Length: 551
Image (cartoon, rainbow, N blue to C red; front, side, top):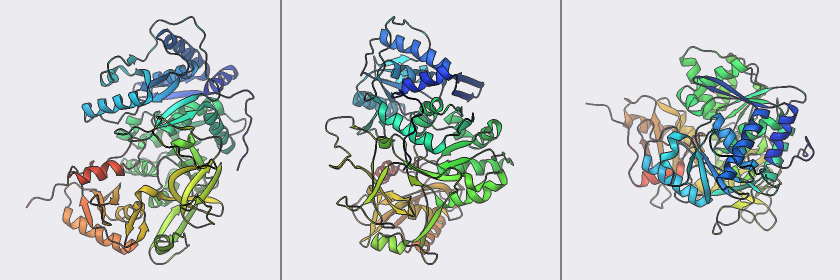
């Protein structure tokens, strides 16, 4: 495990990070908006954030208060977040979808999150103010009365962020992240990815309210003396190839994103007849969701046409409770794939290497950068290639959750139980799936990713739009939802083909294959499948089926 690098003595909080970069004249953010780029250097950001912090103080914000930010990735979001930290308050990033299809539901979500976090107020994009509870919303911007009082700033042990996990609406679950934990994670990232003495840029479209966007794009650049080139999330969603074009234009050396996002970007570029030059990338790592092995391997093959070097590929494993990352592939080490027997995985929970029969390709997430244990149900460590729950321990971890009634994620020895299943092989971590999503068929354990992978290989199934879960009636049956590539496809024929393909690939067939209307299967803004929400929708019959062919 890498040791912590003391990059700047005395840097213990996020405001320390920004002020140190401002003093050195390093670090910058470039927002590539539709009406043109806007650049914000660390020094400018520090000045604007301090003025904004004084305005927060004038509005009654005190150290320890919680303040929300609601809006898209814009300079105003950046200033608001750093102002909150400078004022000694805690940031609560508000989640926003790409499209607000149900205004009432969105308003209800904001009300629940504001109440759960105990927000004093919420700094928001003017267009989103109507969705906030009365008396909480304040327009973000440069205007307003400023206090003459010096911002108190936080202490290292103070809470920097309440990070609500994706989709936590009915029962909001806020992860408490301290400034000390954030700085510990920055040091880990610095050790792993930093380019000593070289000014460099990274490229991102991840939303700031997600931990990937918040840490890697909002907090990290001043720490690593780098520039981050920011593509609006909504622009990426509309034109995924714009991500690749921005990498070419800025000669970015690093980028992170879900494997499905990489796949979408490559397909979009090919449809347009484009071949953006990606040869500048030293790091093109998967993050924010489980890795689709087919997409990963296709990216390795097709990426060569775009100048993407195989050694730049890799993957990561992280969670909000760990601030961001727990394991990263080595920079320049390339992507490692482990093919294992599905029978050994289902029967004995062992990752047995195999090239014959029903197998599953597993993409390595690299070596852990903090203490990590693969444990059985009692928390005891398991040997290599035995599948168990992933436990982590270290300085870059949450202190708990919002609310007294939420149980602690830590055991008596200080291990955080992630709820994710995986195994270690040759010192590298492979993630099998979520323990709560595990499917039981005839007494054997399967992961939804197995069914989704097999279905996604069928011609006529929309890539990245397959979702498996146990049937809500309490039995051992499995429901599999897919979206068609062609809206006019014969749904019955596609469902039959998918059923056969899944049976052939993994030896078990789903009880039902529902061909859903395109766009019906929900994902979070960062690209994760919303299995729990879709399982509820399936149970209540609210998933619209694809329109069968006429006649």
